[in-house]
Image 1 (spheres, one colour):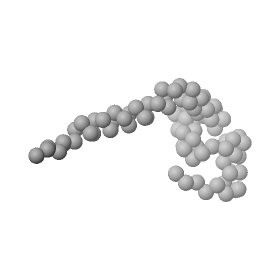
Image 2 (cartoon, one colour):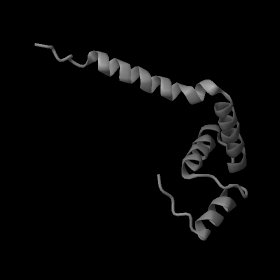
Image 3 (spheres, helix red, strand yellow):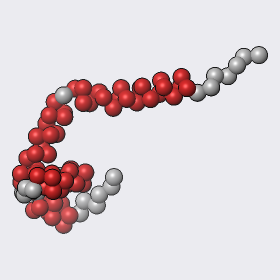
Image 4 (cartoon, rainbow, N blue to C red):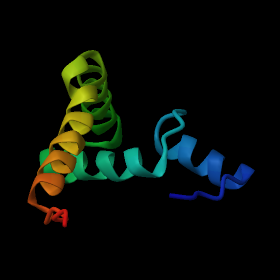
Length: 86
């Protein structure tokens, strides 16, 4: 993902999120929280920040994608046909 971080864009984002800089992905998550809970920007920002804190605090959350990738690799290698020797 690429964002043009011009001075105007940074100011716009900070104005929109109460002086807080958020990336585009977090911005989308905050918009989803607003729609889901019917709350304003500040409340949605707090909900998202709480989610991030809990996700980053749990080491299993950080490790899960690596484990899934390892399982996929093992599964694909066990399903691929083996070359037979002469």
